[in-house]
Image (cartoon, rainbow, N blue to C red; front, side):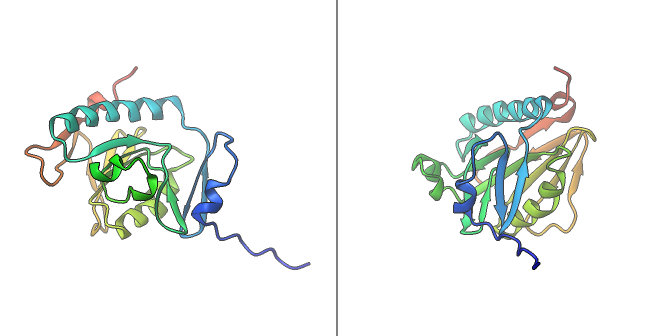
Length: 182
């Protein structure tokens, strides 16, 4: 018996997978499958979404969205960041094919996603030039901040900030508030 060759997944192949509650992504042909997120993960995403929406209403330099999403930079790439700020003009087209200029990407780590978020997706975001990538670690109560040229992250334990181009002041999150109990 011969060995079965691994499947090289395209974005279109991933889009055709069943809607079964899992999140399917592909990065350079590697299929990433994660189960539905935990409640605490979603609470952190909602807190950040509300904060970013408020900030961007005051400083309209982009538009914040949450997954599910359909972000693709090529035929073998399709990702669904937990949260991201995209170029407003691209979002106004209402077509995922046009959403490519991400200013901030945020992933909330979980045991099921940590390896993909820290390595596979982080390298992709650096490769395509996403200016700021936050990895939120709820267990460690910290945020790793990556930029395209980072070899190591900046680790924030008290407050994390994002200073987008064109904004007069940064978006800031006190981590004690972000991780406060429900």
